[in-house]
Length: 219
Image (cartoon, rainbow, N blue to C red; front, side, top):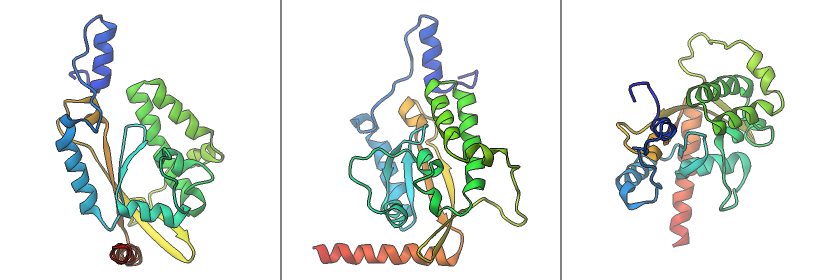
């Protein structure tokens, strides 16, 4: 830890030196991580009606709230149960979110640079594979070659979605769990999406209200 290594890297370094690993890697559904799961459930519920997701360090989707499901189904249609979703691929690939993301080149420029940073930091083949896969998608390298633009007066770069005359502008926050003592816990990321304008706020509240009314009708 003194070298700034992650728990996973610390274990790998110990193994390479012939020592037993120190840090555990517990399945998220295990009883020992029950308080962590409760905290994640609480965060996602509190974020309603706006989207929130939990991902691992390579952006594999672990958990979502209803707001996130609503957004995805609005943009892409229903997602079949059991489908494994990688949010990095969903954002960068040409046939998922890209057709509806109006500032895709800017967003991808920032996002893939962050993945490149992750790959340089953790030095694993898995993160390098994710980086290379994202860079192989059409037009990504061209987007990466463009300079990063700082728009005057814009505190964050929003995600600007458009579909069926509905425009959504969202920004995100990414949180991690403090003082982790387990690899799984350290690698969790909670991403929450917030509206940047009144139209986006109204759209999510309207969808949330309709969903609640549908739940009442079902009972």
